Image (tube, rainbow, N blue to C red; front, side):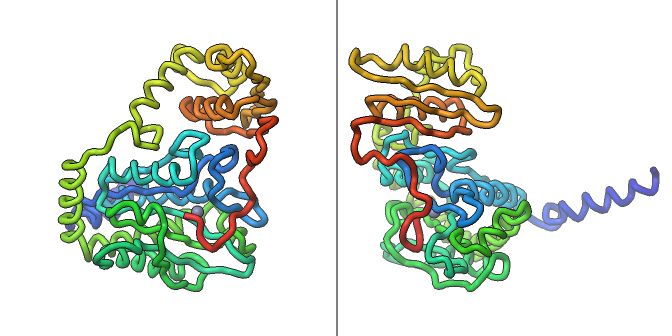
Length: 363
Ligand SMILES: [Zn+2]
């Protein structure tokens, strides 16, 4: 036993060498990590995100797997990190528009006021397309802080994920356009490419991609720390002078009105505050009794727990009831859902998200 002890001491010293020899590389940095999309398996109203061409893994899921690793690495390097989501769900209520969902990310960025944000996405396109890129803000007066983050992340991805390193993208995208907080959207591979799809489902892959994004972030912070600190101060002052109306916040978690309504609903449906997937059927019954108030309304929805997922089936005459039910399960943090609920008589309501979305990037 005594032989082992000195080895343990050595390991501890190495892993904390940055603490012994100086501040960790991201000390002082506040970063938001934004796993793109969310709730892609069951949401009817938010159709963004692609799928693995063979694996059918949702982009929502892969973005989250990479983001968890990224958050861990950034925290190890001394950053304060916030995640827009920590499970597979959307940020805005079910039934909101795509723009609302994207704006919910801006709500989150501006609420936490990071020095910069990293939005983690994966690409879709023709099957032969491969490689990685990063996007930056198109409407800044001075590009420097925006372009540099995208460039550092894209450069760092080279060699870590399958190439080629594609050109940076400098076009109008909601989450880059609608805030002045520096951020980039990384598109670290095409899920529509068989080789990348086979690679990215492997257990070790998210760590490799995350490590590259982290390297880009460290380089960026090291190089631009002073300018980022100054910009954050300016933007904080601007927001303090023009505070937003909380009722217009589309992120469910940050909207006090939504939270109050949901709290009341949860008290009706599942008093006690403990939520179990196995009781999903009971929650739906209680939801129906409390929420379906119109006499003519049809709500024949049931929830069955198969040991892995809550299976929602049946139909309702009003999509609003479906949307409220989905939000209820999200509020309970019961995210493993399959959703086959129908809305008869509502033409044009998409039954499910398309397997792939068109266009090269879907931020
Ligand atoms: Zn995406």
